[in-house]
Image (cartoon, rainbow, N blue to C red; front, side, top):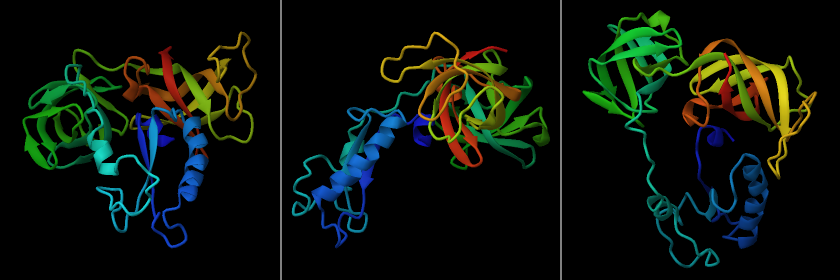
Amino acid sequence: MLAKTAGVKHLVVLVNKMDDPTVQWSEERFNECKDKLTPYLRKCGFNPKTDFVFMPCSGLNGEFLKERSGNVATWYTGPCFIEYIENMPSLTRNLEGPFLLPVVDKYKDMGTIVLGKVESGCCVKGQNLLLMPNRTPVTVDQLFSDEDEVQEIRSGDNVKIKLKGIEEEDVSGGFVLCDATSPCRTGKVFDAQVVILEHKSIICAGYSAVCHIHTLAEEVSLKALICLIDKKTGDKSKTRPRFVKQDQIAIMRLEAAGVICLETFKDFPQLGRFTLRDEGRTIAIGKVLKVIE
């Protein structure tokens, strides 16, 4: 579920310990695991036909991870794990877009250091950026990738950036470093499509939970329920629902406690998908449809 929310589009499910004496590479046991997991993965938004695949394996002796010995699980005719992932299409990174890095953490070391993953564009040493949502202008002093100082960072890199023009105490996790000419959007009120995964009672206006969106955790409250969406047809209800419950999909208006960085899922998925958590449990996943204010 969290993988889907983080943007993972394809899963390889390895059914491990198939070499256990109580299992002995049983096709029946493999199919039992497969049949129990498939409904849950479908509920999380993965398509069983295109989005995930099951493989038997043994982590102890490496069977079906890199290669097969040929004398076990003869009923499985698919590829081994390494063979499968090596043949998957490579990820397309947005190198041409405006620079964007959600801040995961920060610390002080002869200046202000921020850590995060570059989600879009490129950045070079000496470049002027904006730190949102406060619109603080900063300058890149040093760039580090894999602990080595570099002159340029690109989309997909996990990096550390030393900034000039801001103090460490003025930076928080969930802030976003942006291109000065094309900053990310900010707002407090937004409309979102939300799937209720696990919640025993009904949810109605006034309900509050913690929203985890990119690197930010912020309390949000439900301002209004706009409509329900039929799971099978995708049709929207014509009347406003009074409440929403487990396994339903709804479009709702949410309000954050403060101004946050976010984008619509359509424009920028990395800043437009989120989870809602309550009392230590993930109760819903959603995507931002529109930033209101």
